[in-house]
Image 1 (cartoon, rainbow, N blue to C red):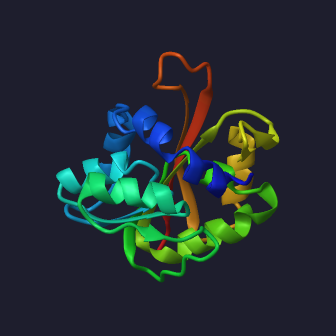
Image 2 (image 1 turned 120 degrees about the horizontal axis):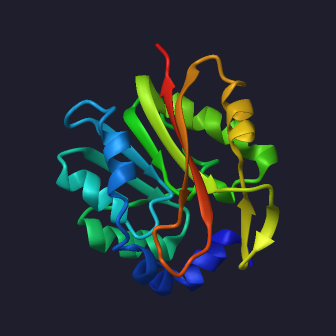
Length: 194
């Protein structure tokens, strides 16, 4: 079973387990760097939790996910269509002020990550902002029937350094917002330099 198939089969449970999580601190850090009413790509939107928040704050949101079932649930939740696309299928050019990739790019094999981050960078307007978060650590492979690539600060910095257009704003380590989960997360805010 690959990651997309996992989310198709477990969409309801995943939706219920994530749709009400409080991501306020991360939302504030990201939104504070964007122009008022700016455009956001929610990359791997899952339940639509984050898209719903961004829409409520007046942002113009494009939500996408690779899982057909997650797209259906997210679309109902946010009241608009959700694009069903894989990361490799997306092809936007200087459309978005921000790209939100919360716990989504962690399903990309490290060998493909430079190509995918290139697509993300291409999708951003000059001075656009990327938020991306990963499980913290050194693991890469199949876990819980999905493919995961964990990251540490050094690996994120090395990845970003491959792009002349990208500038690291901050890296932050945090605990899972779900009380029953003993998982550490690492997130990065990145700016596309004009």
